Amino acid sequence: MVYVILSVGILMLVMTLLYFIYLRVFHTPVEGQNDPFRFPSENPQYAPYKESQMQGVQELLDTEHEVVYIQSYDGLKLGAKIYRFSGSDDAPLAVCFHGWHGMDIRDFRGGVAMLRKMGYNVLLASQRGHGISEGHTLTYGIKERQDVLSWTRYAVERFGEQVQIVLFGVSMGAATVLMASELPLPEQVKGIMADSPYTSPKEIIKKVIKDMKLAPGPLYPLVAAAGLVFGHVRLNSAQAVESVKHTDLPILIMHGDDDRFVPCAMSEEIQKANPAIRRAVFPGAGHVLSCLKDETRYYAVAGDFLGEIIQPRS
Image (cartoon, rainbow, N blue to C red; front, top):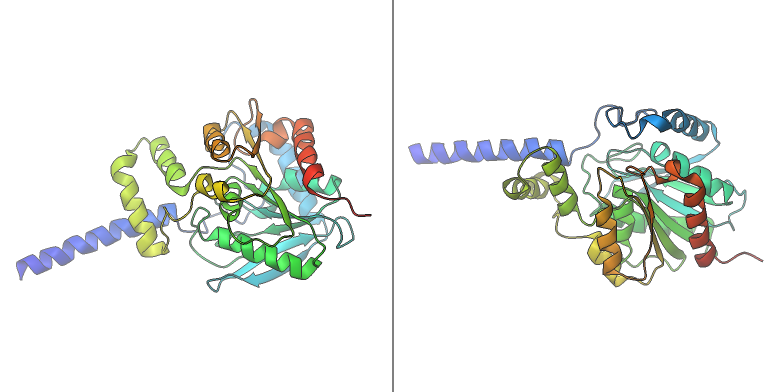
């Protein structure tokens, strides 16, 4: 009897530990997540751009848009904002996915400004468990990549068979669209732009564990177990670095070489997995700050890529 009680006690302790890890690593939302003006104040790399960031967010808040919803493959209500900048459904459409604990208009304040100048319509998706979308678990792109598939199918239904779609993701959203590249996306998807992607959920989690001055060796298996038990996700079931090997879609990766969250070497590894990938490195740029660090070059690189994959309408 004593051994039974002891075993139950140990099991309860283990499950409590795993649930605590789940809350720290997978659970969302977090406090302040839905505040569009909440930027990482502890990171000095963002300080020089604070004013322009605030202005960009306010401009998007003030811009007319439509809020739409779809149902995910596993029953969640997912939301997005549609900006019809061109005034025509015949214009190219960028379907955009924000980052970890991010927010649509906050993460794409610069990207949308660029797309607007190019005459694109924009669909800004709220990732599951973020913003206006349901859910309480983020899965680092594993389940989110299926949401990419759902949003692209919705976009074709909404804008018509003639629409030309480009997927655009930043940080976790960048890894997500790359993981989605091997899925049966509609033929209207012409290419992918990924800003600051990581190679896999496993590697970015291990990197963050190291940043916390902890040992990833013994801790990562506990994180993986917590994700499986409470988040119902297998962290090794999808990797951006593997998915890109199985796609013919044109891909552009942009990454700052001073990215202290997602190392620039990760996007280099992704490119090596598929040599057809185009990659632009921005000297001195921090995490998802390439557009702000060198807007002129960022626009030029993206513009050249889009000009090659999107066919002009007659």
